[in-house]
Length: 330
Image 1 (tube, helix red, strand yellow):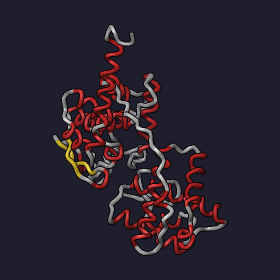
Image 2 (cartoon, one colour):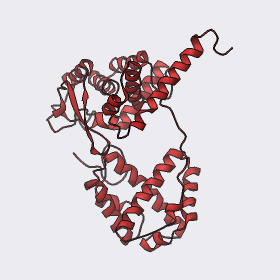
Image 3 (spheres, helix red, strand yellow):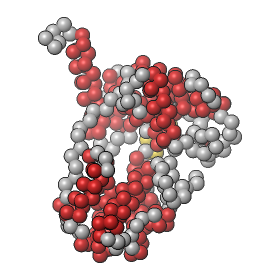
Image 4 (spheres, helix red, strand yellow):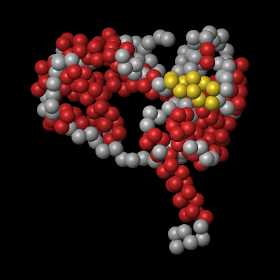
């Protein structure tokens, strides 16, 4: 798989350690330790490309801030001397740039990860960062589609005007999200060797954790339809889902496709690729699925993450009650 060159960051490929270190505004001693940390994430922690890109984006912006804040590129000694007010100034800057609490918390988590690495190596210790509270993240209940809306979205993808094989590709991807509960990154990381799909599919999820998910006949057929129309002679190690140039499809392409589809169908802005995965879990629960099974199918490390779908189902029941019960609202 080709790696992205240093420059614009995408979730499809992660820069190499050398490219990552070269991209930050910092003194040479800090660049060296940054490279070691990034290599640690890549090789030992086996972080996904999307996670690596996210970490790199957050730290790149932090070092840019320090360059302006300190009057020059930061070195390791500068990191030792940072105070609580310095970290707060960075978070204030990012909030003023439009970041919401969830993104701010992620940025702070990235910074803490780097500082923990330095501290464990006896390189830099800074107590100020441990005293900094993470931004409070509002509890959000996932917004699933109705079963009819999910199926209509997929049907619309398969019937879009334009290139038939691309329409079939998009429909196959969306079918895997809704029919198998895959994350978008998991679907796009599949290779040709994974097809034709069998009754179960081996998926490598977050944290490089492996799980097996059942594959519905409709998902197998959707992938088969796409491969029959795909103009590229894909080899086993090639990406399963490719774009017009034969390269692995980027997540941004799929998100844009869903935006176009939801506008055409008059669906809410909450309809995203990930909402199809939410819908998979919510509809399983509504159909009598138990939380432990759904946890395994989704690849959640903690049952508490899966339990949010019980709130979705409870909210759905309340909505039905409000609309249907003769005494509701009176």
